Length: 150
Image (cartoon, rainbow, N blue to C red; front, side):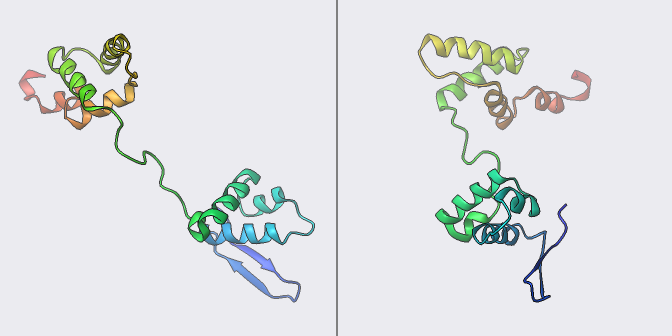
């Protein structure tokens, strides 16, 4: 965790930056970078807990989006899965016809079929997500079986 940053203006006045406020830290880093005299961008970025690459990324985002460009961005998937509906049906079909097949085997079999049809292949993670979404992952199936059938 970063410590609070103290800026001095030469008149023995201090300005404290809350290190928990990422937007403020990034803005001050950019401001200091634009006004720099003797320090390098790398030194300025390091002072605020960032790399010089991050400095330039935030500078670009700031110029394009304004202060919103300095906010944290959502991580992870930005939209729904791109697996087509016919592929989803095939994944479900594999699971129902051969429940003993694991995710890797389903993916391998599915990709063999898709390659024959000159379609895009599917990754193991996507197959696992589809099975989980429909309650067909092996973990879900085992949990839903009565205790005497496990």
